[in-house]
Image (cartoon, rainbow, N blue to C red; front, side):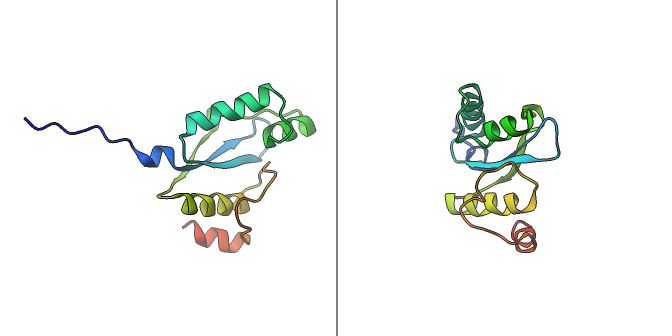
Length: 117
């Protein structure tokens, strides 16, 4: 009898994601190649430890707003790191974000919209 090996879904690990603010229309856009749950745990740890390099902490200090983890989700699954980085930067250009950096490249909003379609 042949059995199929359970394959790890790489698209579940290599993703671009969005975490909306719980109090305003802004969001955080990020990317990870290690899985979204792992990355969310790291973000939550940074908030808990008040790490000043965290966009979530900077936004919370300025506005007293916290992330809406329940509204977080995957924007795109990517095949490789380069694609993931470019996709993240395009989404950062498209949204009102709390991000501190623009990503690995700076997109014009119109080019970003074309790039992620």
